[in-house]
Image (cartoon, rainbow, N blue to C red):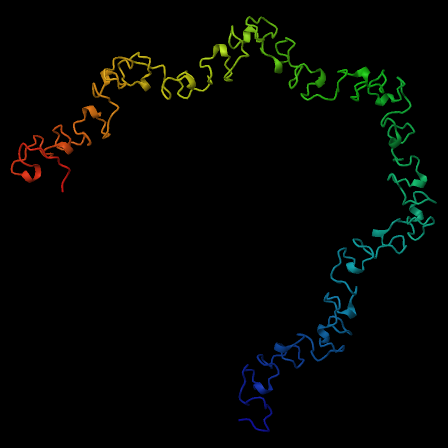
Length: 458
């Protein structure tokens, strides 16, 4: 029990939750062992703010022991730019001291020459070498005030900044204003940018057409005369009156003078002056004999004696040789050499007719006999193949394949005959006895000699 004289009034003299030998009411570091104090600063290790150093020393009173102070003499908690460097020790206030892309110890935010070391200034002009406008000279000396130091001035007395034609020669010193003064590849004293004929001497013009010889389109003739305005002077025009530059089939012959538009005029395998692409008879003379006068030489005639150009059904077979006029000769689904449009028996070969009746076997009504022979009952089935002579084979009301005229059991299937007596079950007196006898069983078949239609078991 505690009393008014208990030195650990906050708890029982006997409670020691962390078992460190110090009762809870007097525990310096609850939850940890008060006895363990590696740095001897009287603050148990479990509650030590600065392990390894004396937590009691804090000269700048910022709450951080000196041993762990980031910025001695200043408050570690004050960091306006949130770069983890206290304001009192900030290299670049307002910016992150940790960002130093060029590794020159000057943070990016305060870098005089980003990307280079601010400390290196060989010409001692206060401008780091990496950003020096005029290395080796003082960047601050600029007599013509053009922002280019005198030591590097291209045009002293004139502004180096004004260079309208962008040739690195300032306008004030430009020999060929608006053009590049530096280039004169042909050494004709005329800068290339002002050169009439770049790469050649402007001084030579033998045909006196004002075009220097080195750039003459048509040497010996006047380049300025071009009647068809195709940029090819008349003296060198390949196709007068037409544009030499238009050559759709790329055969070097301008379209206006093309013999075979779309094909190469230069390729003529049979040497008949007609290019192969337009040759009506490749390998032979297009101007050779043409007996039927259809413009196709005899040697390449598709239908000799007839006009190859006539093809009313558009099947590429001339009308004069058309096997099936009005239809496409090339379509033959059953492959019997007879085009579908003229096929007698579609799906089967028209060429096979075993009985010689002009009806192919595949469509023969009476195979082995003449489909057009005698048909006494006029039912379109020749007599030799008639299922029911003198009656119409096509009439079959009960659909049992037995024509009505020969039906043994009209209205029922003649083929259903359980006792095999030739009488369909539906019309059988006694369907269980092929002799139609059922002694002693009148209930099943009725009296002997009577006729009972059996419609199945009750």
